Amino acid sequence: MCGILAVLNSTDDSQAMRSRVLALSRRQRHRGPDWSGMHQFGNHFLAHERLAIMDPASGDQPLFNEDRTIVVTVNGEIYNYKELRQQISEKCPGKKFGTNSDCEVISHLYELYGEEVAGMLDGFFAFVVLDTRNNTFYAARDPMGVTCMYIGWGRDGSVWLSSEMKCLKDDCTRFQQFPPGHYYSSKTGEFTRYYNPRHYLDFEAKPQRFPSEPYDPVKLRQAFEASVEKRMMSDVPFGVLLSGGLDSSLVASIAARKIKREGSVWGKLHSFCVGLPGSPDLKAGRAVAEFLGTDHHEFHFTVQEGIDAISEVIYHIETFDVTTIRASTPMFLMSRKIKALGVKMVLSGEGSDEVFGGYLYFHKAPSKEEFHSETVRKLQDLYKYDCLRANKATMAWGVEARVPFLDRGFLDVAMAIDPAEKMIDKSKGRIEKYIVRKAFDTPEDPYLPAEVLWRQKEQFSDGVGYSWIDGLKAHAEGQVSDEMLKSAVHRYPDNTPRTKEAYWYRTIFESHFPQRAAMETVPGGPSVACSTATAALWDAAWAGKEDPSGRAVAGVHDSAYDSAKAEANGEPAAKKAKV
Image (cartoon, rainbow, N blue to C red; front, top):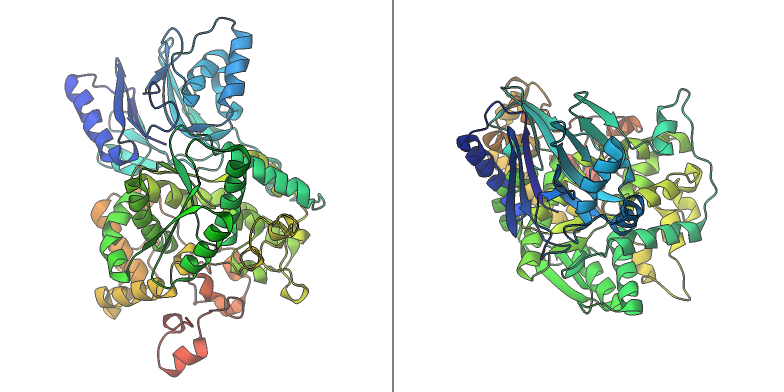
């Protein structure tokens, strides 16, 4: 990944404006510390901060088509670029490519196919194309929003696009997240959704339609193996984030098996885990690494070190969402250590819980139809939460995270399965993500130890150590008085913080991003264990007790908040936990 900034149709084409764009682009140089590029065409400016993973020798950006009339600045990776290069060469024999970069195909595809280009790409991306032949531009973001991008409008009517909000906040009168799975064309001035999978169209149909394909464990397993293996495309050393939970462990297992089978110029697979001393993730990650034979790196942090980093974390991830900040902080600290070891790219396990209903609140789903609807809602909103975290917490230190559970082909397979197969029934031994576990339960050639394959779901912010969240809450108690929280609706009438922890994060966010448009990019509403506001209504007992931690689902998580014990001590239930 990289950092992109485009300013288009500006009324100022002066050297001073060029210098301003360069200065703004430097705000996200952490995303691309390897090289900086700038292309100006009249009153259009395309800037780029490069993290060199594919073709580090010649892939500097912006990139061009053969006659340099199409200019593109890209953040992302295109996994089917070889097939696309072949397609381009067959359509235009003798076509010359200027680099070996996977992203160069975008300029040639736009020249040949115009606005169809986004739908032809298999990968994760955010890019801007400038067509100097007719002075138009086109921008697109990947289907799930794995890659971050914002769009804004300047006082002079100019259009701004950037990987991070910090580059837009001072020069745009309004800005917003660029919607995933969409492209924007200057010819119409409108967004068009190009990503229209069956599970979206069925969800939006009146009446709503539901998937009914039978569960095929081999088909599911093969689809996920293909997704992981294509993401191992890299010209630099890479590794895998290994918390010891099901999702990251499966990713690590598939990657390790491929390396064992085919070899790697980088040697053994590197794996990385972070947590407080004695945390569940450290123990489980260590066991998986030993089983897989990875070169394992374990990082510790203290609650105080995490608290000290909170302001910097919020500046980088650009949100005040509670669960995102809780999980981003250890990931942010770990990414710095990973970069220090010379690794630029990691595979990660985000997306599985949305696809398969892995969050513990799914135990309370009232029907298979509502279960499926919630997975679609979660997928459509994922760019505001886990995608944002995985992208920005790692890219804060120039490390790229790739997420195979959000592969287009894999989603087509997984989201077509009859949701009755995904439903949780502990009385029948069907715990969360049962069908994924079963697909990889091959005792004759095990992917993982049984105790890991069937380990209960831990949200990342819980798994790094339960005292992490408890420590954050305790610190917020000292930062925010009862009176401040009681008056929160007056200071923050929109998306009002409900807890002292949320209030604390909001004040820090406001110090970095005081603009109203910045606040409006952050989601809100009640949530239980990461549920949407709709699913928070599944259980009346949750009313007024919303908390994004998985331990908020009493009677489901093995270390759920002990309400009776806490209340006996005269404290809110969320303050005491079994550890």
